[in-house]
Image (tube, rainbow, N blue to C red; front, side, top):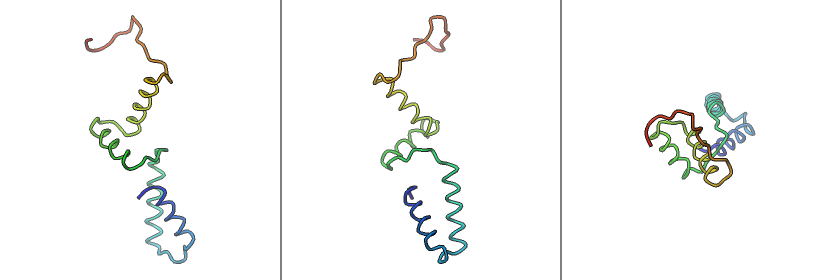
Length: 96
């Protein structure tokens, strides 16, 4: 269920609260608390969200970290952010 659909369900229940059972209210309030606790601030289309979730799992990173990396790389590639450079005196791991 999308956040929008859930918000509409909450509003509908609030409009007819006398008709709602205690159990239904408890379920709605627990789901609302869970959604608030896990809010990421960005609602994606399911056709975008599902591949991102799978890729994040595959890479072993959180979805917000993956999105941050993707957006940051895009901003650098399109000259909205400067390219980070290494100082000559800095140490690097690995080989070129």
